[in-house]
Length: 416
View (cartoon, helix red, strand yellow):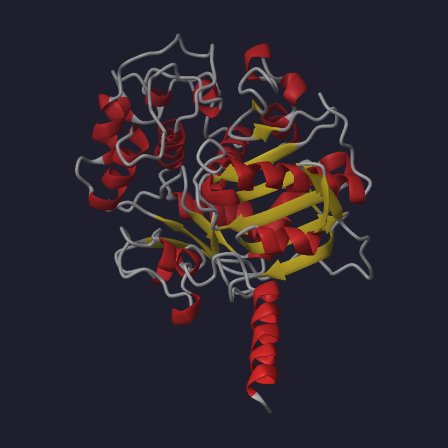
């Protein structure tokens, strides 16, 4: 072969490789086999992000509490066929494959009427990966609160947190009701800018090092931006308090409650786990980890208003209070709680005319559920920026993709 044909062949091979390359795969550690981080502090760095966020239990320094699956696995079969999924973003039409080639998605699962239409793993991930939830864990914590209330362990959502957590007595969070914590409306000032200097960074350091103790940090938050119950302001600290309400009220760990009340009744096929702080308390605000299909089972249970088969796992009325925008006070409805989403009990309320709600975590983790259409969209990801304010293009395209999936599968896209 002459030099020129060799160069042409090499160029064609390079072009073909580029077409099938996953976004930023080399920066994300492909050449090293997507390794986990050498420490907890380094697990979110770019070369370790894919590996760490799908196997956080293998990161040195991370303490975990296992959540074991039960003996019975609930059905989540593949569909015999699936419609083509298309979406429009910034006036350009794309396909599902385009979305995966454009965004840093590690796992994508789309369920319709209890059947899997799409199941994709990227960046070398496989079905045994257990993906970090980030703040999707807040919704899991909310479900446990609803079950605890139904069992009488939490007598009323209007009880102050200090009724259950004695160590918070006399503090701002201790005086806040469980309901106001669920709506993130304590009125206490807690900042989440994701710049390393905010209150969420302080909380994360407290969880990782024990200095100060998490309860001490929670007690130190005293400044107010508004009266309790009036205004939604996102604050992970409020979910952390809810986790402590649950463990104090029951005398059991969050992992044990998740296992008995949720994971085994759900029919999960794989064990899950919570990460804990140095004292062994699970981090209720961000650190539940589970396999993609089990996230899908959770979404499908939510789509069926808390049921698996004929068994009610989460009380239906609580779940409607948590996820129905029309049941929220006006300040918490779509376009009012935020410029786009409303906010329920640790669930984001999509501004759709049909009840549609979302579990969300930073860097692109999400589960969108539209019960009437039976559609569940699960995504795990390693977006560059934590939020839409930091990484607007990726988060905006995810919103366009959601609408495209709903439209392609016969769901409702009418706005609130």
